[in-house]
Image (cartoon, rainbow, N blue to C red):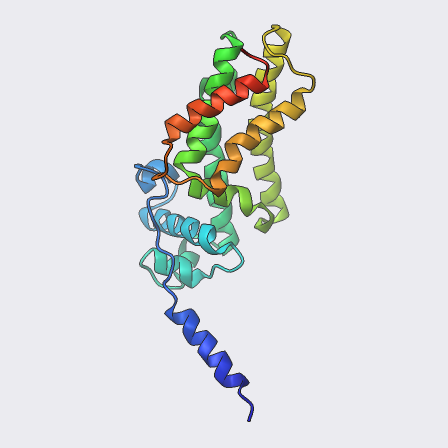
Length: 231
């Protein structure tokens, strides 16, 4: 007797019975509008928040439009009312998420603070980077792990923003080296290491863990300064 249809039927039933991912407090104490901005209407913002939860839990490829719609309390086809495709929703998450991360670096991101003490400026940059990635670790995890799911054009746009973030840190480190307060042999290498500190935490950080975002940001700022030879 061929049991394959029975096995397949049981597998499909198991998938249907599995709890769907639910949109959680992905943006700390902010509302959807505060995080996503007014560019999108409320329903679209709910879909983006649901998509973040789904992508973070299941990955982009394994997430269906039904998952996203269900997480937002909407129909399967609701996503297509606001986004042409699942990839377009991912791109919106990536674009806004990276922009928010850049904004979290503060005035130094625009080099408005170029006349500040390099040590203080660097510490503030690391606090901004780490604090944002801790508070918004679910969004940040999607931004870091799902880059390859973007179309080539969307990928290039996001990489340009990421390069902008890297350039902010490279400028800050180079300025400290020029001022004689940072002891660095290779600026690019140490910048990559500092950025990795801030980004890697999205793999494991929990808001209900031992360290608050502010505490973790302070600790990592100290680690970064020691990497730069500041005593």
